[in-house]
Image 1 (cartoon, rainbow, N blue to C red):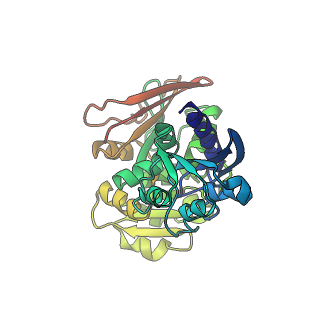
Image 2 (cartoon, rainbow, N blue to C red):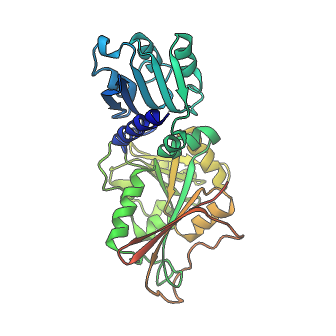
Image 3 (tube, rainbow, N blue to C red):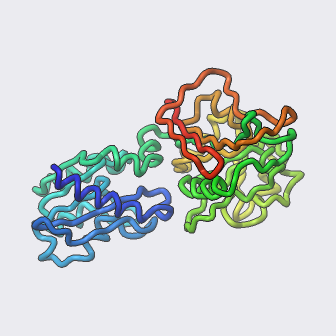
Length: 352
């Protein structure tokens, strides 16, 4: 078992190489071992390209593969998608044993890949470093286990718990280290969400400095259609990533829809409708960067899985806007506190 854990750790390290490029697919790593020697490693390099198993197997000859052991961080697929089934390739390669960390929560895969391997006489071991593997693809796992997007709310506040020094103004609060971390965080999510007030006042681009072929979709909640008076905003004109707008104003759909901007007409004014739409569109994770009003709405509707707060050692004064103030008490778990120069990063999760 110790050997299994050792090689699975190598596979987990391989999986991380695909970060920022696998998009809706999970990060997966593979290691092929024979006679206690690592013969090949592989990972899912890019969405639509070879899966980890295929990447590793392609580096070896049939003789090397015969009677070898494959370590893979996620159950091999057994269906045709962007790539043919990995389970078929493993069988054809005459691999003797397959060690799997996490059973795939995706209903197209769950148990089917394992069943195929066992049906062809391949010894299968599951659950080796399963917790670590699930954490690696936290959003993917949560999405397919719960049929809804993982929601993280982020805010930056001063010591007197203000997000700005004047209502409806943009105030720089945090330092450059926080700026860099936020851009890194954005790249781990499939969507970044703000309200129309933030879009209008801050005129953000909501991009990431991380190199990725799949920048997060920028989402704006604009129920009333205020954006009609602000058609020159970066989110509507820069063409750097997709922008989705959720509104109850049909004029937005007529006037703002183009190749980069998509407008969704809401039947209600409920955030749950937005979240349900995002889930249907396969959006596994959302990073909420809007102001306190929007964040409070997410919190009070019990839609938030994680809170990230950046705390700056300054006072902004009573004229500013207060940070998130949910209507009821909420306990955070898995708390982590980190210092970024003279700012603090405080992270906690909420059971929803």
